[in-house]
Length: 385
Image 1 (cartoon, helix red, strand yellow):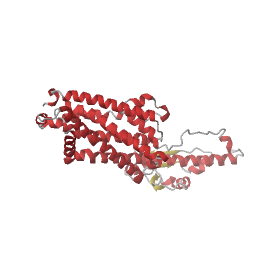
Image 2 (cartoon, helix red, strand yellow):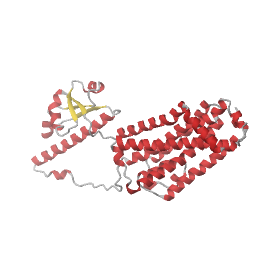
Image 3 (cartoon, one colour):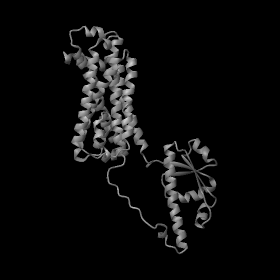
Image 4 (cartoon, rainbow, N blue to C red):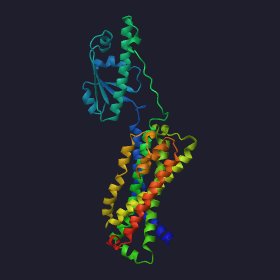
């Protein structure tokens, strides 16, 4: 009987076009957008060409300074600010008259940069300009010192050597933040509509009373509905992991280069999938309670939305914590351990103690929430509208 009810509820969920769109297509579209957004955000502008507006009087000096910079096109402009506002350029440059000659003669010279800090391209171009000006400055200083018979090394009394303890790509930190955030949002968005329809929807449509009159135990009905929500969440999690993995591998460069699991790739992927399924079951228990409490689908959505937003707080807490700084506490707290465990896995770390702790805490909370939902479902106060 449990299997029949479970398959029937699952079939009904995927038969409904509206639920199917909200459950499958919307999470995939959202996660794809987030993937390409983060890829674009961590891009350093390599391969792009930027337009730099330069006043006509400064064009000759600017061409000398940027002669070795290939991805910057210089454009003459009578009004730097207007050129940027019109979208003709991403930045502007103004040099004092005879800038190069003045710097070589030790005379006063200045540079004015015009840009838009809210534009990523403008920010990237500004970094390129500052780097080119720094190189030019060192060249001028070295030339002036040599003309004065002074060793240029006097300007660098000591050298700084920085040793990085990890050889991982810096972008792996972004992936360690992106993947669990994508999963938590996808599971919540995907299983939320089904949870609302299976409990609050039954009450709103006045079919819950008829369902309870059938010769089936309430606990069996509850378990079948919970399994349906957990299954949908698990399917969404696996699809999301697969889609994001394919998009990162085929359509991104920075995120793709950050991933390197070596011989443990299949083990890490398997652990990530198992964690996603357990987290989907945990989420199913939680949003099942919100749907039992609600009397309508709209009310259930209002209750479940804050629950889904809880995942944002662990993301903000974990983003600045190093892998070696993670403690037992981070792996014992549900929702947070999704981020911490996946963060370890993204760095290629397989710690079975942390894995068992994360799995165990999620399963324990899942059982507790399920018991609370069962107690509520056994009372007419919560299941009758």
